Length: 360
Image 1 (tube, one colour):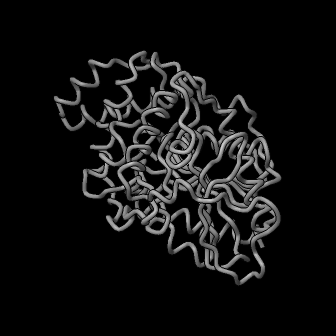
Image 2 (image 1 turned 30 degrees about the vertical axis):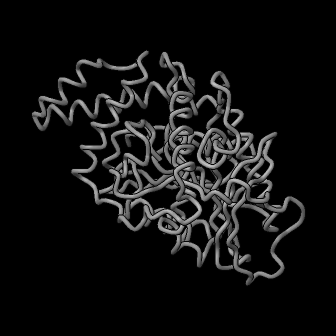
């Protein structure tokens, strides 16, 4: 969700909410069932959360929907380190009538981080997280008796989304991309140039000075990424519609001091894994076109016109280059990098109008 972080998600919400926490009992929750389907009938309601053994560690998975018979959407969160499982009802509650929504707190993030604190020198890799995502999708398909899922990823989650979709297209009806990352250097260079141009167009001398002091990427100082992100967020806010505060009301499972500390520690850990202490993190080696441009499943891109992080020009060049059974591109005004009504409205529209027929 927050590709280039300037502070923790809790601080990003300006202290208005106490978020990102888990109840004391939640940390000891029994794992979800791992054998057979939990769905006894298509009309059965789903509301589950728990730890699932995934590639050697227990990882947090939540499943919500009004009917077992509905198509299943696996949401691959961004950040990295910013799970949105605690905000599922606010963000995706209206979707639960037509779809079953699955969230997974990735290795090094949120509830999963709290359960499995990595050693300081333990590295995250895109390949490892990709394989975790494939294992989660396989588990959910078995658990719910679903033949295939729908894959949806944004920002950092769009890197994993492409990786997962390329590796195991047989698991999914389609992939919906939002704020698609393509290439670490290309994305950073475009973000920096577009943001500096915006600062100059508005004669914003303070931010012109900040950005010119950074110089164009690549960078070796991890703080530079956060400096740029703070500026992009300011400019995006001036041209986009904000998300309703009700979206960010966490469910009761996530409201203890321990869980807030675990969430922030996981965010710090994942952020440094992403950018690297010398600009050599997972972002620096990201080059999705090198994976091949042919896809074996439909691909839909939802892009914000005001996105200064994953800018439309880089995403569009990638979209135009790929070959897929179906593909579509939508560029939305009043939408930036972070979730807002335009973003979720477009995602839901694609799910209902383009992906639902593929899943029936």
